[in-house]
Length: 96
Image (cartoon, rainbow, N blue to C red; front, side, top):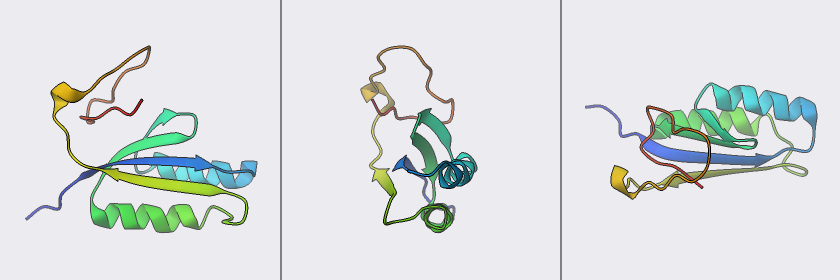
């Protein structure tokens, strides 16, 4: 039986350029950039935990912030898209 994928939004605020570049490299390996400091990904629980561990190793918790939001499934008809940009083909959600 395959694991369930969950739509996950990752937002960050990292003070140091070196740590930020390292974090972005990790996040790019799991999802796609939605905004300058926001990524979107479809992840299993196992993948999310792996990403959390790798991402946590990139930041300084005294100076930086990393937020990971796992969202419930919604119907494709409920998506609202305003402005320029496109929704990644594999995604069925959009965060504004």
